[in-house]
Amino acid sequence: MKRPDPDPLGYDVDESAVRFSNYFHVLRELVHLGCGWLALEPRLEVKYALGDHLHDDARTVTKVKRRLYELRTPSDYPGAPADELASLLDRATGATSASDYLGIAYGNLKPRLIAALRMHLAGLDPVVDEPSLRLLTQMLHRQERHVAELPAQSSEAVDGEDLGALPVRLREVRALRVMAPLVDPARDPYVEITSEGDPFLGRSLYVNGEENHVPIDPEEQRHFFHGLMDAELCAAELMARNSHEHPDMPWDFHVDMARQCWDEIRHAEVHDRLMAHELDCRWGDYPVGFAYFRSIYAYDLLGRLALFNGTSEQKAMWRHSHRRKVLIELGQERIARVFDYLLADEVPHVHNGKRWGTHLLGGDEAAYRSKLRELREGLDAAGVPIPTSPP
Ligand SMILES: [Fe+2]
Ligand SMILES: [Fe+2]
Image (tube, rainbow, N blue to C red; front, side, top):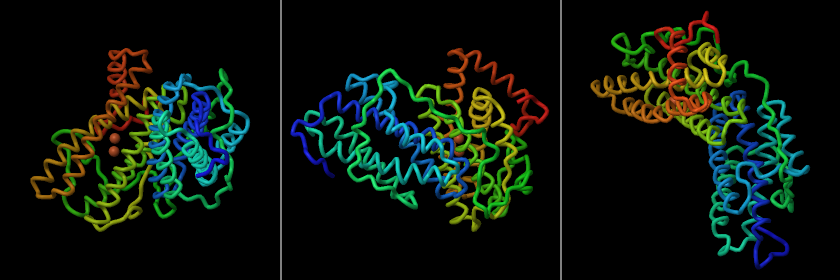
């Protein structure tokens, strides 16, 4: 930690606010771009870490906005970054591949942010500005964890550079660029992708009611959890793209999407571990397909929220509860517990559909319910949009 000429008084309120404004820009852009690239990163372990980190960064933006408000600065948008920071952010925006983006985010932006946070901590007055001290300590810890978990192949030297001290252009706005629409999510090369996915997985696994079949023998559980793991990754990727493709939505929307993205990533990790420890199979043992992902991604944001969160996840709650009950009766407690946690996480995911679907309809809950009814009419018994229905 170094600040060549420490000021015993620390930063004044305006200097402190400018610093937090610069952190806001770096973190907001990391969330925006991380959400854009998540689906295009093929490596499972990297996808896991990225989903976790973008959720951390989204929550941190919320805290930084709060601190800006406390420091008498417009917290919704604290002015645009100066040329020097804007050109750093432009480099990240101009990334041409997921690995190119990760190199810039983890080899340049995050190390620069860490350097600025350290300087800020070293220079502030820990008593008069204790709220900043607490927040900066947490931010520094998180960013250090991120660069340790996803080390860049080459890090650029940031010694002595302080992006926190760069000026902010009040009343100007930096536009966020949205990437080209996604074609398909990326998977590790050892995962086979086919148009029909795993042919072992029958429709009876995904319908609600009496016809539902709970996978109980080891062979069908292997296929089922493998398919479910891919569905979780697709769900994380869909939420991330929802955020990335709609930068003008309120900030809380992005936090909700980032949280759900992380939840779905964690669900994939749970199934990954369950397959390895309980079922003697591995990710990549069976083919996966993107037909369902494509059918939902083809809709606009309202359609995605109504069909995926408001319908698919809502119906999955019944199946998770049913699967749990059947497996407990069979003495398969460990697998039953997984469904109990999936069920718990599904509640806020369904709520995300209602909350933001209603927002898109001007706050009219009845309009959201009628949109749900209309879109559900175009689904088959397993909740898949019938291909002839318009997207
Ligand atoms: Fe999930
Ligand atoms: Fe979910």
